[in-house]
Image 1 (cartoon, rainbow, N blue to C red):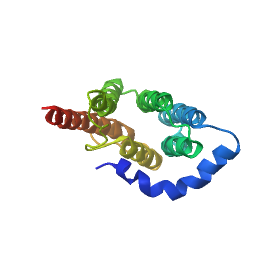
Image 2: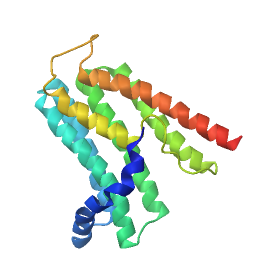
Image 3: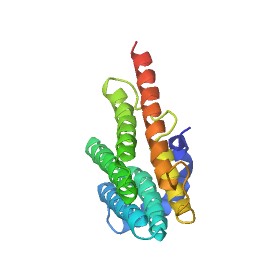
Image 4: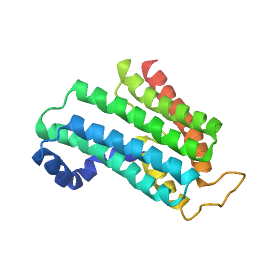
Length: 204
């Protein structure tokens, strides 16, 4: 299960954004930075959703979807402008990892379940690490497994929207955000293991 494989099919929807950024003189690195700022804003909104008012979860979910969309746009823009480079790819991946960390940090701080946040963020980071480490040892970059980054952002965004109407409802001592962290922790580590096994088998 991964939405990453559907990236080629969204190309036609990217054109207005690609042409818009190109028209105003914004390059792919600039779009990557804007996407990173969306992630920071989402983290802040998730925090306020937990400690202030759950309507903030709606804003957070919207910002998460914007981060994910811009993460697709930057690559398409690089190809459109003919400036795709290893340096740009590096910047994109670094900002993606920081985005993952700050978003989970915002979710965690909002409900105060720091042990869950630790398990979730390590699962997410290891999933991404195994995907690129496979490439570092001579294989293709691995996007497969139970949940890729696109899936993860979609799920976080969806739960963010649901967290508003479900505010105050708990099951097993956890609300919607708490169970989201459980999901990210469990599925993140399972996906990391899947990618490791795949890479190990391919190198054997």
